[in-house]
Length: 196
Image 1: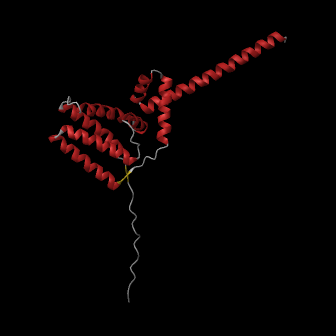
Image 2: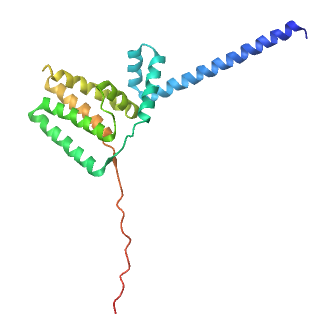
Image 3: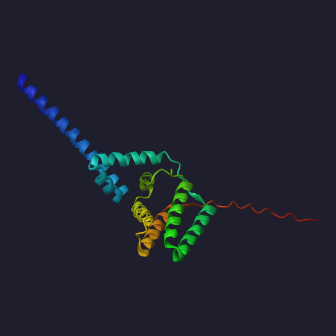
């Protein structure tokens, strides 16, 4: 083989290796995109719209995952779960006489529950972002409820919308109401000694 054909083979080899590296990178990115889209659902599409780019949206979603993985999210103790459930029942009962007040109470109760579970209580967008990592199916409900709640301050919300806000808050509330069931330890029965 002469030098020219050897150089041609080297060039072809380098091109093939670069093509394989590019293909592997493309497949990795595609798999990463699919994983994020499946994990975050509608929140993935919202992030793409907000950031105007799939790459920027995916970087932000990966940052959310990293941030939330550092949090200590804990289940509620059984008694706490019962207390929150009881408080939710009072919110629903309040709706009949004071729909606007019930929406405000639902918002406060969801915030309290989030805090008790270990979510940081920053601004709404940070709370929604944190919730989206572990509860992507209901973060849309949280956003819808929050939008209605924000409009209640101007007094332009009808009762049906207030009802929808409570339903949206309830979806998130139910998802967050993860109770740790601690089994009670039963003392082993001791044999009764016969007395003589």
